[in-house]
Image (cartoon, rainbow, N blue to C red; front, side, top):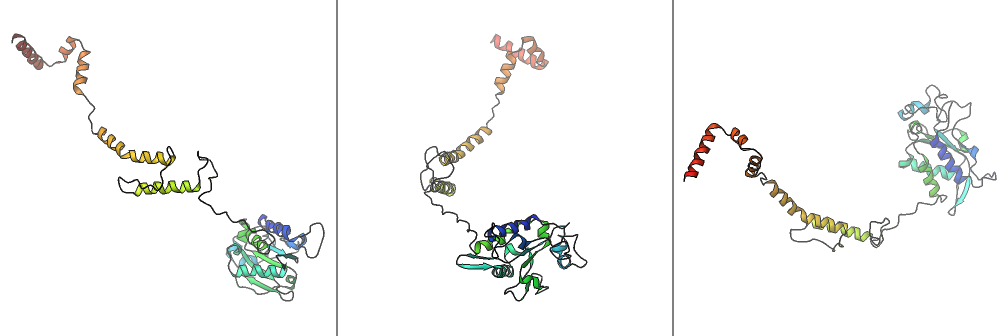
Length: 302
């Protein structure tokens, strides 16, 4: 059965929260829950208030845009807003001014209004007009003298895309929702929010460290390039010390890599010292053995 999607229910709740001024007393100037509808009544057939179980052959809410045909589900994709009147910011706001504001945002192609396919409304309570993103129609039936109809492309409903930003922006524009507070300006004297090991560290200290590191990296040889002297044992000081030591460390590694650490004579002496004479004799080839014997004999008789 056709049902109300969560994203349009969120819009409905937002409007009732701020336009149903006195929820304990039924007053004509309040926007009452019965005046904000999403799903059409059981006899409703065709149009954006119906889901896939109630659309009709050639239904304009399905066939005129691929955004609708690809997004058809059991969800309705429309919202009706009834009459109300509230005073805010020294002005009176009602269904007529609401309609004009939303039409102006759609006509201006506001980013948060691009899921709205059409708005059927009355600017004066006597004539009915329609803003249609597809340019198909310009008017509607007389029931829209007393309520404004919003159609949303069905793919946005299927995707569950948040539709409250545009309506929140309207409520902010008329003064019923306070605008967000601007972010405070950051001063260099402001202390850091999180402790970095120095309780008095400021934004300016961080900026100076970054500038120091940048200047050191690009400064000519034999010049510090520092704009301020970093504190002893600070992260920047440690980083600069390591950076300065790096060339010497590289040179030492290169020098060691070019050395031959093998002492063959010491290795041979060690091996021979561990062997008995008969083993050494067995390992010597006959001719070398004779040459060694001759040399030993010569040395003994000289």
